Image (cartoon, rainbow, N blue to C red; front, side, top):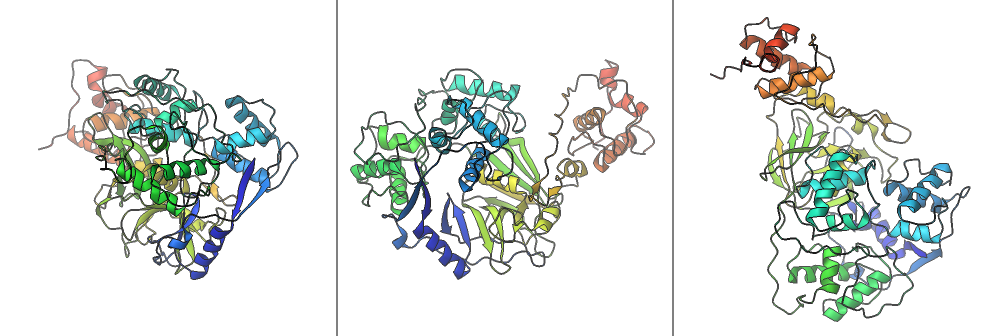
Length: 591
């Protein structure tokens, strides 16, 4: 199995862009020029970027010079760049959580063994050619009860967008995720197991996934038998019936499957370039034209929906035919509110009524300074994003850029160079405070979540009129930074919120609660005060100034001494309706 190591033309382009000092971005794993973005300068952080155009015509598809090497089998004791690459891929697939050492040790061997077990290979712990081929071609790993990681987060996010999941996006595959997957499988006519196997994930992330509320249920596309593509197979005409989808193709993809795609697009009259196996400008343009003609999202990416349209749809519209009407788009799954006063970004999902009320994710951020504030109002995302952006005036960079408008964007904390290990650590430490030149800075993980999950049409609201919520800020406090690795230190998984019911008794016996306490009793206190209209903050289980203020309001309304301390007498009155059925807890006077 041969893997592409170097595409000389792309390297040459990258060098030219760097020498020009222009803004660059890495998109879909290929370097392309980038025209927007700004941020910072708190003092020397960043500056305004310089616009650039897209690829010139001469960099369209063609026969590129390639340098290839034969991959070696890897086993315990081996070392080198290929081992580091293996570790990086295992990490990307959530099998490996160690450092990228380039040395094949016990943790790497265990990660390979786990991968082999999941993909029904001989479990040896050695990364032979077959294991590496499947590892580098696989789109998903099987997920089940007990799985955890970013792919579980992505699964939960997609299930929420389709209406099957209503809990917190935790990254932990527990009972609520099993129930959501089972409901999705039943609705989409898949085997109901509660396990997110590869076939289930392919349907889930395709354009054919059926929402919980949809009436019609198409027959699910069967999972492909193999994830492997024979890179040495010659390009040839293909049987247009039941050509299995194997992997997503996009700008920068290479290999025999790209040749297969280009051959088919040529047959259909959409493509006139060389059948080179290189997915670049002309191929992207052909795919976009085909998608537009056939009424689907024209993004130039060949996902399962586009692949089946190209190879398996007898009613595909040709380039000279009357275009199909554009399909009714799915509702945008998320809306985002940026709270300038609390320096918090909140992502909302849709509830059963289609309203954006379900909190999916909350994150500390840095908005613009008082001198250079982030603009307030509503903005609609265009879907434009990039893996890196540059601020040439100060020679600084940021990761996972998602455009908000022509001058601001979501992006990560600041880097001194295009290197994951060259973070400007002060920008991490300033999260939760105004520090940018208008953009919305986030941790790398949070910026990546926005980059991966939030797309075109999402409404972003920037507000500077929201009340202070110290409990919310405290619940989102950042983990200390590991300065050597330049990633946040691992912290324990937060305790799940206690189950609260308004008609149930609170945890007994009642005891005095006051500022800085953290407990289940505090959580119940906050929830009860929320139900009664005294508290509008985050129910975090930690008693801070927001809770003190709510307790004082309750005490004032009920003729108690206003000290902000929830003593036993105050709580007996607060919970009177459940502690003494038939009585009624006083509600605030709104007159």
